[in-house]
Each structure stands twice: as structure tokens, then as C-alpha cells.
Length: 276
Image (cartoon, rainbow, N blue to C red; front, side):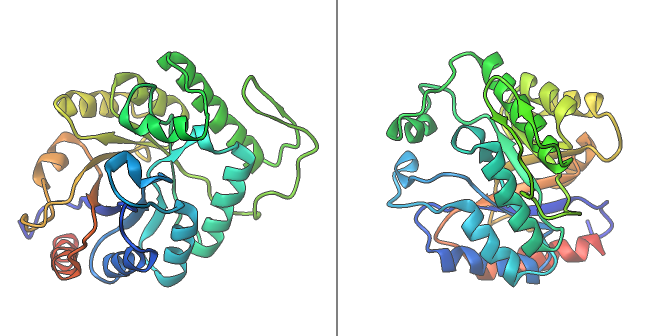
């Protein structure tokens, strides 16, 4: 496997039940070994997974950006329901400045009503759209308004968001790369139209969904990645050659507390050897 083609591998760090310092140590470990990126989930309550607490992702990501030098950093994925696009633009611009251009914005529609992660929105009285088409419409408007802010537009009027005489929000000459989280056909089609890449949750139909993403990719820069659990017992943290053969360019592998830094470092160094 030493001569296997390059497949980028990221860590997705779960914020549930871990201290901020523990999360930062995992990120430093990833940066110093052989991983290509570090993501943090966007959840404010540990209750959704029966943990005692969670963390605000941009706060943690800013700290990670300040103590790393090589890995990409970003939220996977920021929940559009909880974030006004102007405030999201400010948060991401600040992160991009700290990361010196290494930040990528993962973005998603949030949980549908009736699912376990919808509990967070119920806690704070946020109304969730039952129709998937309406959630996609809101996400499209979120992305459109973000790009409008990056273009320096001062006025935006949509169904969900509006701003007027807006200026001086984002640091000039900063990148805005958007990756949309997906677990089905509609979201992949959406990502191909509105985003710079798609991150697909691994499930029973994963091969068909990857095939769809590959067929819809508008250019070679459109990134197709998969989201799976990190396997401490696998020499590369999980599936490797399979994803390459299907046309995937990046794996995002989730780790939960308690973290095994020694094993993460060993696997990271092995991955670094594969990519040499």
C-alpha cells in the first residue's frame, strides 16, 4: 500500500464531553503527524448524544488555527438555522485570518424536525422547516448572501435574510470555500450547484451517492469527501483504497473523547508515509 495514490485524510473532532484543551491537543497531534485537516462539529448541547457538555466551534477552531501551521480547519458543518449569514461571515473571516488561508466553511441545513439533533433547536425555540425543499431554499439563500458579503455588496434582500448599507464585515483578500454536508441525493445535487464541494455521510447507499457526486462535479476542483468514524484498529484509520477507486478525494474521520493521541499520531505518520 506504500504506492497507493494520494487520498487526503482529516480528523473530525467531536466536542461532546471533551475539554477545550483536549480538543486542541488532538488538533496539534493531527497537524504534527500526517493528517490534512481538522474539523469540529457544530453543536451547543451535549444532551443530543447523552454527554454532559459541548463547545462553540468557532471559538475552538480559532484556538486550533493559532497552534497549527499545516492542516486545514473548519466546522463540519455549521448549522444555518443557528447563524445569521452576516455573523457567520464575520466568524469565518476571523477564523480565516487566524488560519492564514487554511480555513474551509462546512455548511448544512441543520437537523429535520423529529430527529435527535433537532432537540437543540427545540431547546431555544427555533422553528424548523418540515419540507426538505424549504430547508434547501434557506441554505441556498445563506450561501448566496455569504458570497454577496464576500463580493463587497452592501445590500441583500431575500426571503429569510436581508441587509442594507452593510460594509466592513470580512477581512479583504480572504478565501471563502464552502463544503456542503450531505446524506442524500437532493443535498448532493444542491452542493454541485451552490458549493465548492460535498461531504457525504457514509451509509448504506454511499457508493451510489458518490457516483452521483462524481457525475455532477462541474470541475476538477469540486471536492468529494466522505464522513465516517475513525477506526483506531485500522492502519490508516479506516477504508482507504475503496474511496480512491470510487473517486473520493478526502476522508473526514470522526474521533470522540476519550482520545488516544498515541494511536492518532501513529496512524497520522503512516498516512504521511503513504502520501510521500
